[in-house]
Image (cartoon, rainbow, N blue to C red; front, side, top):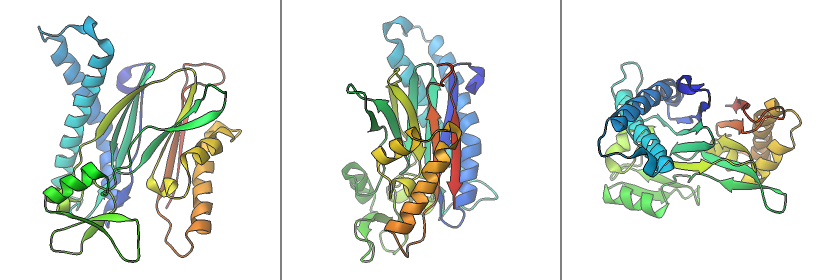
Length: 288
C-alpha cells in the first residue's frame, strides 16, 4: 500500500561502500520512499491542471513519464541532501540504489549503480527463464566511460584486478570506484560520477513469476539463470532470498578463495501468490 494505494508496492536494495557506506545506504534507504511519493503526488497534480494535457491520448506513456520525472527529481534531491548531512561524511563513501514501484500490472524500475534486477518468467516452451531488467552501471560501459573521461576522470583496472574497471581522480590514485553511478562519493562527482537513475518499465503478465533484486556481490558469482533456478526451486517462498544469499556466499568461497567476500543482499518480489494473484510476497537477507 505504497502511497496508501492498494495496488502499489515499493521495494529497493541499497549497497553502501567506503568508510561511511553503511550510514550512507541507510540514509538513502530511509529518505528515498517518502521523497519519491511526495514528488509523484506533486507531479500528478501538476499534470492534472495542465490545459494542454490529454490523459486519454496515451495513459501508459503518461504514467511512465510521471514516474520517470518523479524519480529524477527524487534522486537529485536525495543526493543533494546527503551532501549537506551534518552527521554523515559521504565525501569518500556512497551507495547504489535499485528500486521498484509496482503499480497494478506495471513495474517501474530505477537503477543507480551496479545492483541488478532479474525477472523469472515462463517461456513459450514452458521453461522458467531469466530476463535481465537493468544495466550494471560499470565504468567501462561505453557511454559511462565517455562521460567520465569528458569530465577529466579516469577509468582503468589495477594490475592485480584484471577486468575490474574503476573510476579514478585525474591526478590521484583514488577513489577507485567500481561503479559509474552512485549516491555520495562527492570526491568524484565533478569527474563523471552521477546519481541519475535509469528509469524503465515492464508490463507484468501471467507468465512473469517474480523479480530478484540483488547486489553485485550476488551477480559476481551467480548467473541470472542460476538465481532464477535457486528461487524457483525453494519450497518456501519466504526463504528464497536467504537461500540465494547463502548460495552466493558458498560460491564466493569456492570461486574466489582468499578474496574478501563482497556485501551480499537479495530481495525476491513475487507477482502472484498461490492463493490469490493480488498478493505479493517479498523477503530479504544480507550477509556482510
